[in-house]
Each structure stands twice: as structure tokens, then as C-alpha cells.
Image 1 (spheres, rainbow, N blue to C red):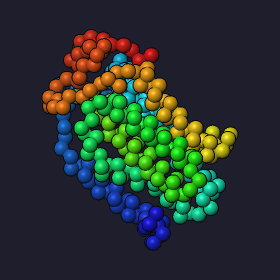
Image 2 (spheres, rainbow, N blue to C red):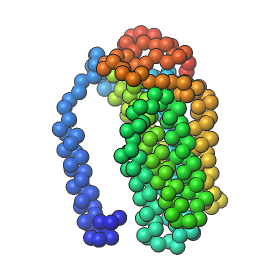
Image 3 (cartoon, one colour):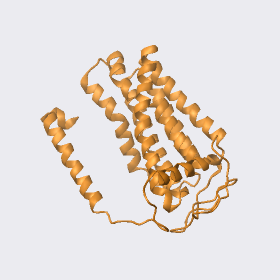
Image 4 (cartoon, rainbow, N blue to C red):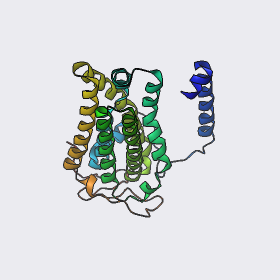
Length: 273
């Protein structure tokens, strides 16, 4: 926004493209990392194995469901232009600040995310952070003062980053090395697709009611969703990570979900639904 206001859209997009070349260069410089154990041949069978693993692990399924609930039920970005026009005069400057507030809060949350590495009850922490994201969005929907709207969105952004950090840590820690790429791909698909559907939901609810009602109801739905997920998947609430896991050890065994990560062995545990 600052670059666009000072130099125009062409310069903004040019700098954006240049920044992506640095990202691509950084990825290209990464060394090849082979998965521990046997090589997996890419294909439909490999994809099916990854999906079967996710369905058979209530913890991982609950983590993905919590992320989907938080974004599908609460994503508010589509409401910003209407709320800005309705409450804050419709100025492009105020709209830019609203759109930036969530990211600014996320940036601040990332800078201060060190204590998240010491959280051992990561499932509970993820649900609490997800509920805080929803509470911030609900507060934004109620806000009549511009400063309070910005503060609510920044708080929501910081909570969302904390939830993402804990969610990623859980998925990486609970997935054996030979399945981590496929499970991470599903996690990425959920993270990329659910927000777009959430914005669609926000627009539909706003057209039927009002933008404010859509924001408030979405935020409260996120809080309720986190509570329900914790109720129906209690393993998320009771799970504790180990302080010093072995470098290449098997995924942690959860209570009620004894399993082996070795290929060819039976996997037991309660199914998702």
C-alpha cells in the first residue's frame, strides 16, 4: 500500500515480482533431502496411502478440521470494503489499513512466537489460539470505532499465526518421515482452499443479513467450532509433546491409538467418523 501510494501500481507489482525471484532462488538452493526408509513411487497409490493415514489418525484429522473450521467459518476479508463504506467513510486509506491489520498482527505474532516453542499441550494451545482468532473477528464485527476495529483484527492475526505454528508443529511431529510430504500437501491444500470458501461464506451471509452480522456470527462460530472439536476429539486436549524427541524416531503413540509406522504393519486406532 505504501509503495503503491508513493510510486504507483506498476512499481508495486515489479517489486513484488522481484521479491518472488529471491524466494525461488532460496528454494533452489535447498539441498535434496531424502525421506528415511524406503523410497515412495509417486502416484495415486501413494496419495491414497497419505489420505488413509490422515483418516486413521484422529489427532491429525482434528488438527486439519480445526484449521478448516477457523477459516471456513470466520474469514472476514471479503467484508472489509462493505464495513469500511458502512462505518468508516469508505476511504481507500481506511480500507487499506483494515486489509493490512490482520497481516500486521500476524507479523507481530511471528516476531513474538518464541514462547510457542515451549508449549507442550500443543493441541489445546492450537484450539485456544483458534478461539482467540474467532473472538478477535467477532470484536471487529461489533467495533464502531476505527481504532478498535484495527486492534481487533491485529489481535486476530497474531492469534492465527500462533495457531498455525502449533498446528504445523503437531502435524510434523505426529507424521512419520515417509508420509510427511503427503500429509503436508493436504495441510497446504486445506490452508489454501478453506480461506477462499470462508470469504464466499462471509459474502453470502452478509448479503442475507448485514456485513456486521456476518463478521460477528463468523467469529462466534469459530469459537464454537473450536469448543466442539475439543469435545469430540479429546486427544487434542490431552496430548503432550516430548521436550526432546529423537531425530528420526517414530511418530508419538497417542493414548487409544497404538500403531506402528513401519510399512506393512497393521494400523489400529479409532476412525475419524
